[in-house]
Image (tube, rainbow, N blue to C red; front, side, top):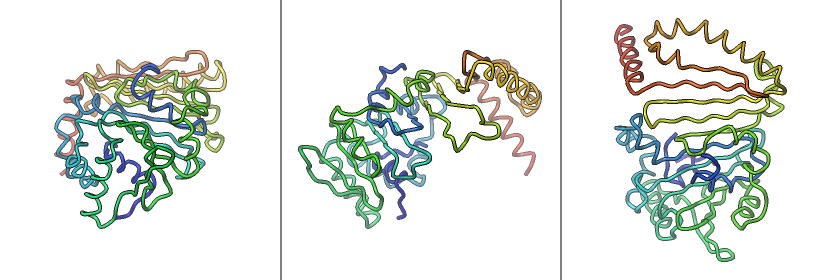
Length: 308
């Protein structure tokens, strides 16, 4: 079984799902070090209990990560225990510059972790990790990748690439600075960690070209409690640029609006789209009710059937 740092880290959390700062996600996010240029998270119970997710558990259990889901269930770490996942990384730093923080009831208990690794080894022939106590903390050596896992408490596991292992451990011990409290603070302030999914990041110098030139940061949240609502915020170098870019976005959307309606997107969805400049950022939002989503799905199915 081939493993990379990112896929094994997700597997280690037994998760295969591809607020303000007081939410559960924020507690986990505080363990992502200041070196992170992008941070994202999901509140898994919110996501799995939403109308959009309903009925997808069978797909989860039969997909590429099915062995991890099966191991989780067998070791008292089934989907009903999953709480949140937060992932931070530096796009220019490679796979060693990442941190993944996972929260699930019982995830940090030694018996559960041993059980999961044994189940994976029995099914694949390769253990997921080895464990040892270091300075009073359970530490996991993730097999096949350059990553270390740290048990934070009975419900929390932090996995760090080698470049960030020391910084993540420091944050667990109450030392150092987290990304959401320093480097990403402004971007994080424009998202909402209480939503089903959220993300925030800064635009690196390597991406300062073409349509992204002058963009400094981005933030996003997705709400799925009753349909689908999306908010995105793009930070730019100054207020004048925000006004100019907002007008460009509005022009581009107006050219696509009619086409979207032609393809079955209800007018209520396109009419909900809002694009506005606010200070040094451009805020975009849109929403669709459950009925809107059903109409879009029906239109897509009709289009597929017509093309067959």
